[in-house]
Length: 414
Image (cartoon, rainbow, N blue to C red; front, side, top):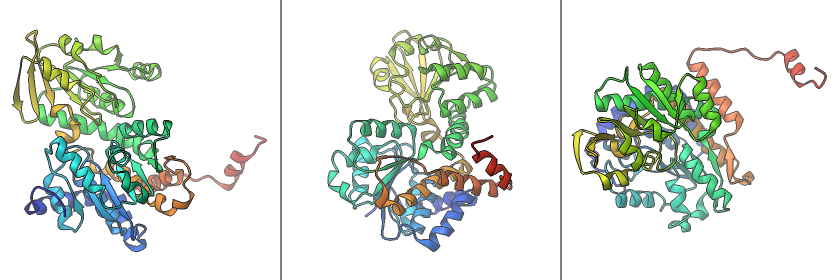
């Protein structure tokens, strides 16, 4: 029995999913393929990804392939109730609603994992974590899983290092067709979309502090520059810091950058990136938001403790008055700003990312008896297949090696 807010919202969600379908040719082609071949026939898939229209269409693609779907969100503020209702109306099992409490969120995760799932599709690692703690009885049914995000991969690698991971996981986020496009172009656009629609403030002429210069941070910084901001990057990796300098950005520690920023965006996957000492250095009106998976990059717990007062300024903006009299503003409670205060990545970008997800899940089913390692990279042929299909839908062609060129490259006597 699904657990959602209101089934009557289904028509609105169906319209959103249809728009995604029209703008995701890769997933449409997989829907057709899977409908004919049924690669997931007899299999159950437990999925926890931000529950909005693009995720919903991925679920429908997997269901078309014969999978019985058990679905929840990966963040209480990113779940869209009308989309959840539309999936239930289509016969899929959904356990999620917008604004769930921590207890409700964990109950939904638990319910999704109570149906002997064979494939796990995770975003941040909550499904995997619960399977290894309070839902160990379900481990026997799991073939393997796929992880969507950097944060989830960090958790998986820690588990694998400590010999705690009980089944194979494909690192979807590390695929070229995921991190090169989703993390850079998707995050870059959707983060600023979330900031702009929430604040209705100008970006040009202001200073944006971007914490973290991985693929997501690169995208956020690039779009900030395009909007006219001056950009400061904070980093712990000296190589990435040099790259940021070479890309034309200022680089300094957060303790120094805190004094200058008008906008602060954390994109690290770590905790305590902006802490109490940083808050107290910020200027009046500074705006803080997070584009990492969990709401720990900005130390929200400590901010709430030290704030003299707080006030809701606009939807998804809370103002905090600090002991020194300065007012700073946090978007979306420090959760993922592009999803909690926006619609997430563009459909065309998620078309590639979710195609990787779908084909990686198919790979797990097809190679169940051969899987030895617990941490698995996306097979190169999957990456190449997605890229080839995407190029076709973009109306682009590329060269192919001639026989002579192939022989030349494979020759030991160049």
